[in-house]
Image (cartoon, rainbow, N blue to C red; front, side, top):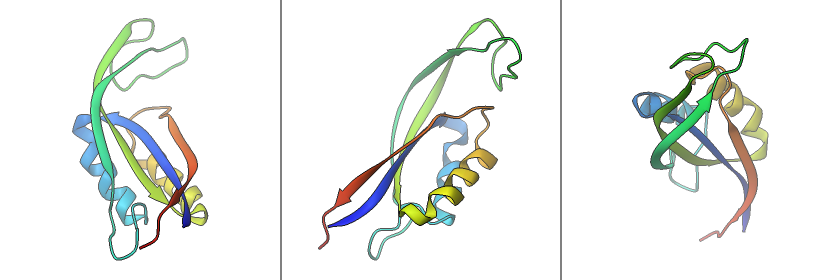
Length: 108
């Protein structure tokens, strides 16, 4: 078994490929002899920007709904800070939600 961190981040569908490419280039999704590994699902993200926010889409005080892709990938712990930096640089949202947690991967 190998320990990795699973990272999930939602991004507007039109920005998903750019973010996936950047994640893979930063080393995310590397398992054995494979790289740029990820999994995506689509859905609707919702939120209301508060005073002081600078929404990428919509207006402050109004509920916005955006078609998003949830990108899931893996990395080693020592890669995490760089991968978070890459997400913040590429992601169009002012405050993207980045979730990560440890997982065990079966070695073959």
